[in-house]
Image (cartoon, each protein chain N blue to C red):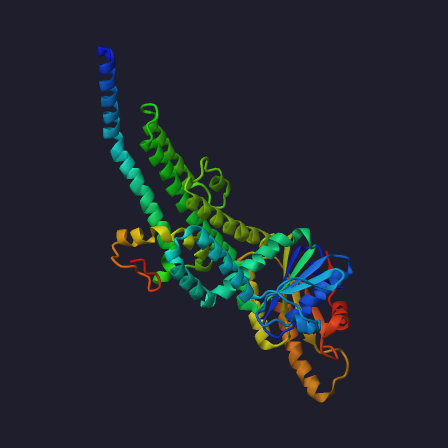
Length: 355
Length: 91
C-alpha cells in the first residue's frame, strides 16, 4: 500500500489551494504521529484559523495540549507584531534621546499598520518555531495558508539572509575602517601604525572576496566595534541572520523537512498544485507526496454523482499523469464532515505514513 | 636641562610632526571611507521610508533607534537640507 514518507521528518508542511482540506490533512497526520508515540506540535499559519474549530476547542497563540502527545497553536500575527514593537520600544528607551521618542513612536505606529508587517511577523514566528522546537517536539506540522503565501515563506529566508549579509558586510567594512582610523590617530611606536592600517585594509579586501554563506568571518572581527550602538546593531543583525539562515537550512534538508501537497480532483486545484510544485522544485524543497482528497467512494452513487465520478476520473488520470514521480494518496469523501479526534482517526486510516 | 636633552626633545617633536604630516591624509581617507560606508548603511535601513522598497524593513525597524542619533547629520551630508521623511522631523 502506498504511504507518505514523513514519519521521520522533524518538520512537515501541508499546503494547497484554499478549501481542499489542508487543516484536516495536517491534523490527521499530526494525530497519527502523536498516537504512534511522537511528541507533535501542530501549527496553524492561516490567518483565518480553523484548527480550533476542527478540534472543537479554543487554541491560541501559545501551544495548547489536545492529546497527551499533541500540542497545537494558531499563530496570531498581530500579537507577534505587538510583541516585536514592544521590544523595539525598549531598545529605544535605552538608546534614544527622550526628545525623539515621539518620532519613533510614530514610526512604530506606521509599521503596526503596514500591510507587510503581519506577514513578516508570521514568517519570523515560523522560522523561530522551526529552530526552537527540536528539544520539545519530535515533529512540527505546519498547516499553511493557501499556496501563494506558503511559497513566499520559502523564498523569504533566502532573501533575508542575503539582505542581512549585505548589512553585516557594510557594518564590517565600517568597523574595520574605524579600527584603522584609531590606529592612525593613536601615537603608537613609530611607523608601525601606518603599516598596520594597510594590512587592515588588505584584510577587509580579502573578507569581501569570501563566500556569502560563511558566517565565521562576521564573528571573528577581532576587536569588535567599540561603540555600544554599533555593537548592538551588529548583534541584532546577527540574530536575524541566524534565524533566517537556520530556517532556510532546515527547509531544504530532505532529512528534516517534507512538504505535503493537498488537492481535490477538480480543475483549479490541479492547476494550482502544478504551479506550486514547480516553485517548490525550483527552490529544491523536498516534496513527500500528494494527498488527493475527497475522492468519491467506490460504491453505487446514483445517476447524478456517477456523472460527477466520470469527470473526477479524468482529473484523477490527469493527476496520476502529471505527478507520476510523487507518491499520491487518495482519501475518499467521507459520509460526514471531519470533526473531532474520531473522524480524524478515520481520515488517518486512509492516510498511511512511513519513515 | 642638558643641551642633548633639548635636542632630543626637538627631534621628538619634529618626528611627530613628520608623522602627522604623512599620516594625516591617510587618516582622512580612511575616515571618509568609514563615513561613506555608514551613510550607505543608513540608506539601506531608511530606504523604505523614502520609497525604495526594502524587503527587510520590518526586520530592520529594531535597529532604527540606534541610528536616529546620526540621522540629522546624515541627511545634511546627503544634500537634503530638511529631513526627507514626512514623519521624521529632526530639524
